[in-house]
Image 1: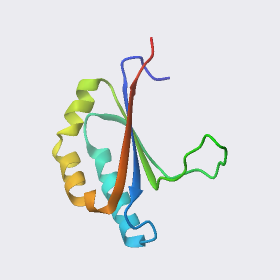
Image 2 (image 1 turned 30 degrees about the vertical axis):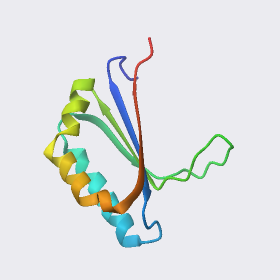
Image 3 (image 1 turned 90 degrees about the horizontal axis):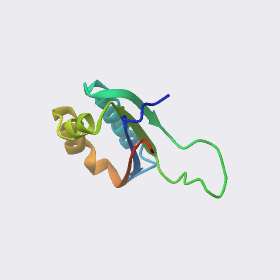
Image 4 (image 1 turned 60 degrees about the vertical axis):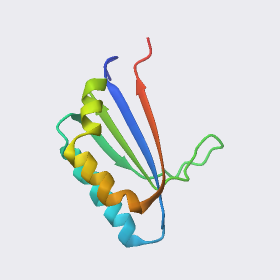
Length: 106
């Protein structure tokens, strides 16, 4: 179970060229490198599941779920050299990114 203080950072990526296997592999490799950022407690890279209901948006190509102990740890992640390098080297691969951040409800 997650603690109320943990910070959830969920990022969805839409590839610029979704049928390009090299771009797919490059973004996946870049995302995997992020797992080495020290402030991340838990890390998951996903792709759309095969579920099909009206409330599901499966239009994205990758999702990245990271869990941090605190918002301060997530803030540190945003300026971590590994994260900045990821953005710099991979930003040309995506056409759209949406982020959903959340904290525990009281």
